[in-house]
Image 1: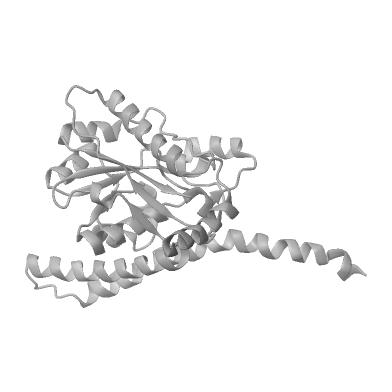
Image 2 (image 1 turned 90 degrees about the vertical axis):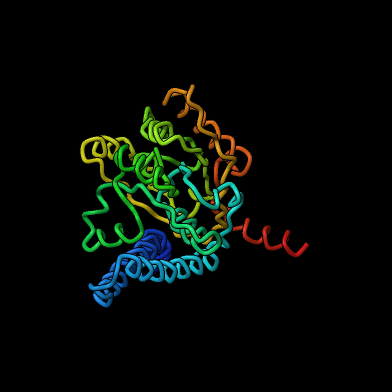
Length: 300
């Protein structure tokens, strides 16, 4: 009798545990890069020339790119629209909407390496350096905390650089309404104006349906975040939704714009991409169904 009374709890808790456990498989996949890169670092020749050393690490990155590309295709039928909007050579600043987990940035980096033979340098949050062994990953994959000065130097060196102005705040407190939550952050605009480079707006369709943050009692978590500046809201998901990254038309350098005006212009460009491509509010089952619709349209 007691077993019958509590059987419903067992039925409820199993799927609930799964949706909060699945994100950790993605995290583990990301963290698997740590021992791999450290093993490569151990095996590399300390006496190699600078050119040979860079060639060695390029081969290491290519293997990672193939793993992530396979992961993206199998789990999410991942594709990119507008890859031609990234320059074949020369600098550009990619500004993107930050999902609960920026899995799309890993996928785009892999796609760009394999199809355009270019590595996207990325600005990541400082708390990542607290992960044991992560500093080597950051060094090899060109992930930095990104001051205005260092970002400008990267772009002046002719590289691609990606920044999510919303950062951890947008990741944690955004939802399936896909509002751009940048507050008054204009650092990326100052970078673009100082480096005199175009901005490529980026958004990934269904990124909020792949992973979500728990929506209950957000206000106490917001207060804690304002003090610690760390991701503290529980993340759930890992759902096999269709993911499609859209790279919009480049916004050219315009010396007449202020950082505030440029921020507004980029935000409007991303909001326009969202409006044209994303069903709002986002729905998990619909996002999973998008994979079958895409497959059907390809057959036709």
